[in-house]
Amino acid sequence: MFSFEDIQHPYYKDSLREWEKWRLTYKSGDEFIDKYLKKFSKRESDEDFANRRAISYVPAFAKSAVNEVKDSIFQRIADVTRTGGSESYKAAILGKNNGVDNSGTSMNSYIGSIILPELLSMKRVGTFIDMPAINGTTIQDELNIDPYIYHYTTENIVNWDKNDTVFNKLLLRDYVYTYDDIFNLPVACEERYRYMWVENGVVYSQFYNKAWEPLEDIKVLNLTEIPFVKFEITDSLLRDTADYQISLLNLASADMAYSLNSNFPFYVEQFEPRIDNLYQRPPGSNIVNTGDDSVQIIQPGESADAVVAKNYELKMGTMTGRRIPRGLDMPRYIHPSSEPLEASMKKQQELKNDIKQLTKLAVSNLSAGMASAESKSLDERSLEAGLSAIGLELERGESKIAKIWQMYIDPSKIAPTIKYPQKYRLQSDKDQRDEASQLSDSVKNIPSITYKREAMKIAVDKRIGSKVSSETLEKIQKEIDTADVIFHSPEELSRDVELTLVDPETASLAKGYPEGSVEKANTAHAERVKRIAESQSKARGATDLSGLENASREEKMNKDESVVASKKTRGEEK
Image (tube, rainbow, N blue to C red):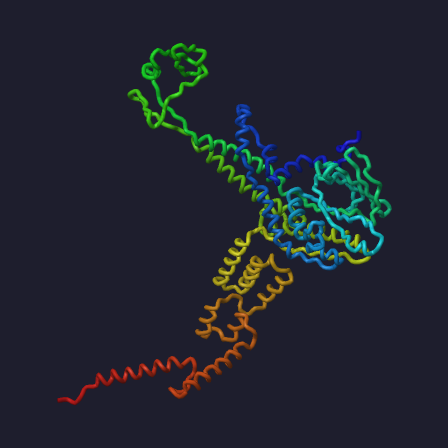
């Protein structure tokens, strides 16, 4: 009988095992624990393992590292520009008219929440561009029918034959609901297969059930290529870090069990075998050797065989005392050493740090065609190149979606143009702001004009480089190159003007005021002085605004000096 395994692509068969690991690692749920949590050894019983399983958790640091890369790209999705295309496409990418997926989803949301996570964790993901069947007979019936898209995970892209980027044949696996006969509600899910092929420039499609029986007649699509787009990067970001998360899972589980068990200290006391019988044995009882280097008390009327497996329990508590033979240490409670736990926690921290570094290295390796041999150094440029490689793949895939969308609507018109940002950052906004501030502060102490210009351009790039368009950033950099004053603060400019180190016009331009502001300020100043002079002319005459207060102060001082002088003048000699 023809089976599913018989028609799988060789690449599909070779990748199934690692796909399962990547999928469970990124999902990080109970399935991950059930699959990869292992027993300590054969000495750990099934009951102990089940108890440890119940308190285990997933240390999802590999998943978190992938999400950090996803977020750094997703925060720039809002800057994607989409121009041209039909009105239905323009409305759909904004989430209008049921959106791009017939569920009100915008294109930004579809790329960021569906395509990106699958692409980074699983290496590839597919998007199918579909079109509802037109059942009407008039043009009006076709007006409310628009294409829509949905995704296929890599496990459901079963087989293919392609020429460059165009599929000649394609086999996909779907999951469809089956409904009950009474309420017509979904009660189960079954597999269905979609086979598509191109013959003489015409696209054909047919569905099969799990037994490979045709479910309907062959359909002919009014397209020249199969409406399927595959997004793919060179490798999954989880290839190396998935095993690290598995190791962390088992270390963390062991630590949890160790910590819980260590919270119950046990009682110990020294004893002297020769006199132990004299002060611990109840009257009329005997002692028997249990065979494990310990003794057991046999109560009167009790056989030795009946007590071999029974531990001798001591009555203890705040109201109960113990007799201790002379020369022995006092009884005490002890607990296991914390050194194994500390060593395990230290190893876990090393694994967490390694996950971050390996994820960055994986991002850098995505740009193998663009980066140099020094890409292993994990410098910022190699990381940005890797993020840009992901952005370019998203741009290529979405452009293909827009092209097929336009083929459904009107193939005679030009497809929409998609443009993704060129720069992405893996640093947090706070890290970028701190680094930009350090560069700005260094400008004060370096006399080189070239250094000042380049440092300020880098600082601007770190602050807003990933938030503005490339044209705007280039314009800012040109303004820095042509600026007469590279770095200044209002306090420094005011002091330099007072010390006559710079003229007011240059200081005005350095602060960004338009040309001619100094002349306007001087005119306004003169008019203000004139108004003040006119209002005070009757009192003490007109003075310059800058000298009004000084003149009043000098007048008062002169009066005070005349009074003092008159007091110091001696009268006629008697």
